[in-house]
Length: 471
Image (tube, rainbow, N blue to C red):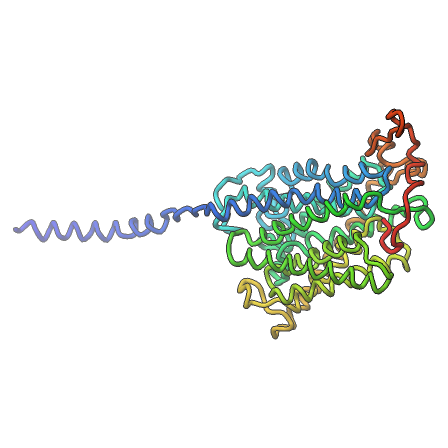
């Protein structure tokens, strides 16, 4: 019994000595790993797949609007982005856009070549899907954005120069702006700019860059005098349908989960597209006396562009209002402003994406409400006028940065290689002079033998359509 106090004393001392070690061990215990949600993962992967389909859809949309002799070159300018921009994104772009922040301006090089990326979720972006799923979902956004620019310069840019341009532009323009708006630590994100799925990141910077590119290289040969009507509007309609379909993945998928927010973004996307289709056709009908198919498909794309930054922040009624205004606004940008100013935005990438994206980003500051998304913010109509100023800051920054950087990129490329095809190449057509192939094989109706029709003569049988919707 005499030994009991000594034993108790030893146990007390050991307890006092070991308690900090035990507590430290408990504090250092690894957190329970995040659990991948299979439903969210499946939703995001399917969304990524249908957004990928948007780039071939864009190729058909643009391809039908050009002359026969340029259909393949125009389609190629979109399709090639699936190759070159995919590689740029996986090797460098993702790290620059979403990597660890450097001074709120750009992501670091920590994730170059997807080094350090795994199937585990990254809670900074989504706690329920593998980071690989997030990488590929954002990657298909990066692919289609430079492809949009091709609509402004269709029919007059050499393919080699175009490849160099899209690689430089993706690295120096798209990736930094994506980090500013969506990357953790990005300064526009920190400032409170709302952009649910790419009003600034995708549409404004591509539309503005397309306009600057078009102005710097000048008009197509014969622009304003030759017939430059769309050669295949059914192809354009098919492309527009694929884009409308893909946009559900574009916007709803940006919720990064199969839940209530995805459903909201899905229905607001459709509502705005439908409203803009109707408003464009109605205004065109009043203005020109005839409703056109090209007007209808242009309207639907305008509505989809307008709702992109707001899809997960506004009500369905607000989406309809934005679509109605956006469709009419983009029509006047294409039919009136472009004609008066005389610039050659070949397929109206600026008139639809630049103007529509600008309106949509600003309108988000009016219509956004936390009643549908508590992670967003209230806009002017819900008592928060400051959100409009934040949206204007995002718009202004995107405009200036895209314009200045595109100007610099074109100047640098022009110092080393020819950018614009010469007059003879444009007359013969970019399909033959750049790719050595034709989109259509013409045959003698009697013998079935192939006809060797000079590319320069292919467009002579094309008829003029509504003068406000010429390609």
